[in-house]
Amino acid sequence: MRAGIANKPWTAQDIYDVSLVLTKDRFTRNFRHMLEIDKKILRRIPKGAEQAPKIVPSSSRIKWWNIVTGDQVRDIQKKDGSVREVIACSKLTNEVFVKSDVQPGSDFYSREGVLKNSFPVLYHRLQLYIGTYEFPPKNPGEQPRSLPVFAKRLGHTPRQWTGGKWFWERFATSTIPRLPGWFPGKKEHIPIPWPTKNAAKVHPPGIYDTRAKIATRITYEPAPVPSEPPELLVSSKSMEDDYFDMLRGRKAYDQSQPMEVAVSRELSNPHSRAKKRERWRQKMALQKKRLEDFMAKELKTPLDRTRRQIRAEAHFKWQRILQEERKLEMIRRWELSGRKAKLEDKTARKRKKVEKEKERLRNLVLTHEPHQVVPELQV
Image 1: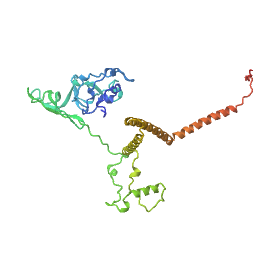
Image 2 (image 1 turned 30 degrees about the horizontal axis):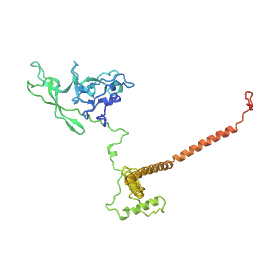
Image 3 (image 1 turned 90 degrees about the horizontal axis):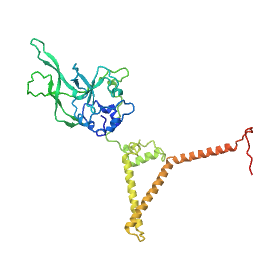
Image 4 (image 1 turned 90 degrees about the vertical axis):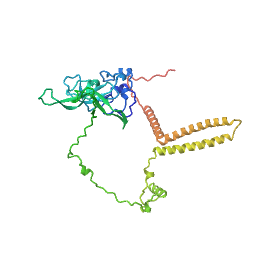
């Protein structure tokens, strides 16, 4: 499941998002599938969906899943007893998708193309495949039998939160068929390891692939740098200022000067968070100093006012001053960004267009035609 949505409530769009409803993760990382889902959301069928998924109530959902992607399971209601691999799990519907031999028809999940060769089976109908064991022959003189063994009842060790996921060991406390040597009252404890991902298959390099020995070949060796640089290479504030003055043309460029080695001022980002914070602190300190000076100036002229009234009026005047300064600053930025010049050019173009239209109408000459009548002046 995607990061950052562990406790996010389910929406109508999430329920129809197959990548959220179905999980191929082998570990339990959160319990979002246990959250309540509003019934109104289930009635909202988005465009393109045929029907709403059958979400089970939160009280009936399975919290701890012992069947995960990659397990080998069988359906107890199937008579053939075939063992199939788990492809994915739907924790909102308590369904497990197992690999199928036949391409299924169109349904809610296969429309998205996520699980093309699989079909859903309810969780409680599945049994984990433990392995194949040797059993004694039924009749004397026959060969021993090799039978698949499945877990009829599961147990687990205490669950622990580690590495961003819940981890526990699972084991079978009861099997079907019973293992050889079992007798009534004997407790079984057969560990069932979690499935592991197969290592990615590495194909041999082709004619367009770079081989490892070529990619790791050393083709450049930097020049040796002394542990203690000479005195000329030690940067100072005066050297940096001289370098920038020569770069901006304020001084004649001197070829004998050493190359700039401390380029922190040149390469540092003026819009970094630290520099923005420093400029903001300087601005706040300056405004605080100005407010103190303004307050002291107002207190010098009481004019039959109490100190409280003077401070209240001074704060009001100070806020008006800040608002006016803000307006002037916005106008300055507007002019500096070129939007004022752009607006003036646009206004000039409109004015020129209007003048041109008036000039065209003044120079318009109509030809004499039979259907044209010059109106007479009525006195």
